[in-house]
Amino acid sequence: MQPVKFYFSFLDQSSRALYILLEASKIPFEAIPISILKGEHLTGEFRDKVSQFKCLPVINDENLSLVGSITIFRHLNREKIVPEHWYPRRNYGRSRIDEFLEWQQRNTAMACGNYFQQKWLSPILNKASPDAKNVSVLTECLNQNLKNFENHFLNKNKFVIGENISYADLMAICEIDQPKFIGFDPFNHHPKLGKWYDRVREELGPYYKKVAIEFDNKLRTAEKKIPEVMYLQQ
Image 1 (tube, one colour):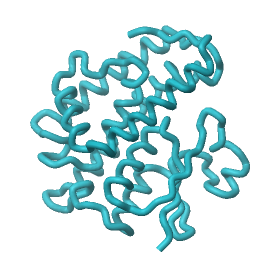
Image 2: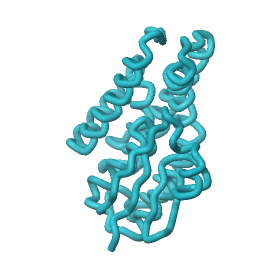
Image 3: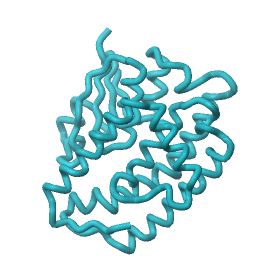
């Protein structure tokens, strides 16, 4: 059986979540990094050889090409050996994770992603300072989404769906890291979130640590190459 070809970027939160899942689940894969900053995912070569959708993450599994983190996650659960706790069948675990993933796409994913794009990615690509007014509006939106996440999913649970870590927690921590690693404090006024974050990080252990270091290195390397960009301080 050929290893799964995994096209990803450590700057992309969904890529990081799947990278951790692949490593933690011991699924053989070939890691193929794609530079978002260089626009490698937008080239004709990427479209013709990897995916016509020109976005990340992407896998190629036995000549089947799939794009999108949730699609890839469900494919891996169907076709590979993935530990049960990531997507448990018992106690409606899969239904509750699916509910979170649907909610997350329209809420935390958008809030964290938009903040990251306006505060860091667009200024890096355009070699310009972030728009303070836009960042302020996005900060309010992000705080409201984190409050909703805390109230809806962490009110009584140790993890998102109960006592065991699942893919919902993995996706959530990678989403929250997107603004956190560029200076935003997600735990201000969100004490439950901070305790949950520490539990998830500890549970993921070296798999999370490796990816977090790679993410931070990518951020700092890009900033050093474009020192004239001035960043807003929280």
